[in-house]
Image (cartoon, rainbow, N blue to C red; front, side, top):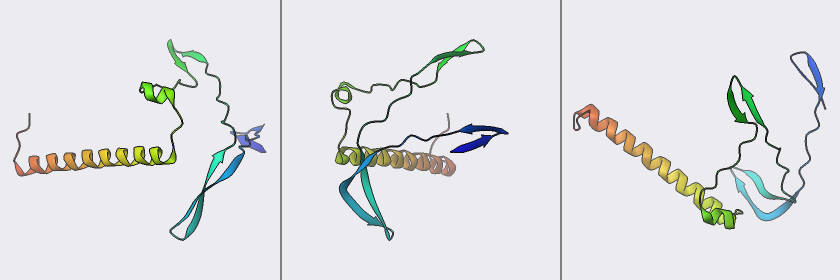
Length: 114
């Protein structure tokens, strides 16, 4: 595919990602959806250590390992992914509610600002 950026033409060939249909499907707001699984994992781009104005940085940061369990089994099931998303959503919701309560209490004069 021929593209142009700021007057400079270049050729772009997007990588083809082969997928297979999974058995999980459904309907959301009248539209059909299906999960697809990758046939083989994508190839990660190599990282490069670069320096700009004396500050070093990497082009592809290495992922941080959170705990030992993730290193043993990095592939999570659909249920584990859903559970993780739901827990994150609930934590964000709780944090938002606590913040709103603190602001409301401060506006009413129920708490002392420090």
